[in-house]
Amino acid sequence: SISTEVYFFLNYGLEQVSQQYDWLEKDLQEAASPKNRKLHPWIITMGHRPMYCSNSDGDDCTKHESVVRGGLTSKHLFGLEDLFYKYGVDLSFWAHEHSYERLFPIFNRQVCNGSKEEPYTNPCAPVHITTGSAGCQEAHDPFEKDYPPWTAYRSEDYGYTRMTIFNETHLFMDQVSVDKEGEVIDKVWIIKESHGPEAWTAKQ
Picture 1 (cartoon, rainbow, N blue to C red):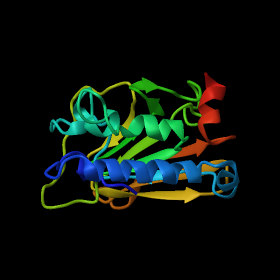
Picture 2 (picture 1 turned 180 degrees about the vertical axis):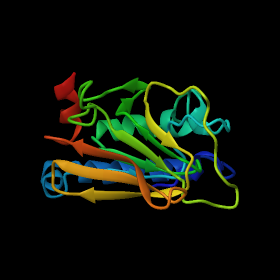
Picture 3 (picture 1 turned 30 degrees about the vertical axis):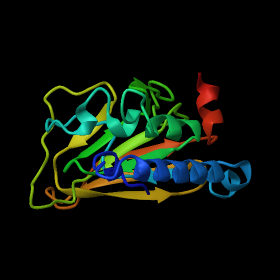
């Protein structure tokens, strides 16, 4: 889990961002080592502000060059997307937007589906889920009418996401709508025969 807020509150300069980035890279490097990946194959990250979204509120994730995704200043310092791709992060959870949005596997604004028929089977990039729909006093965050090609499913319903890791190859998620009295409104299997950056290379 990381803080995305350090990218937006720079009252004390870049030190907090730099320290977190260095820690995160070391942690991902250790997690992605062959020994640890064999024991714990799934690498899942959590952060507050998403890299991508199709909401209509003008937040960072709606911009072409998201700060969280691409980094700070014209030098693109401390961007997270390249780092996650480098170490083969499988799945990223985000919030901030008061809605739910499931993306197709994506890297650098390019959809990286496993195949047209089974996009989440052996994808060639991380999967992103924004699950900020549990509710607050600020109500829902609406979506733009049109959505980008990487949006697979989205909903403004209040609700919550459930995840079950069955084994090293199969992970299941579903989204429960509170507005619809517990109805499951979305579900997806992520199936991976291999983990790590080698999985991306194998698909290209």
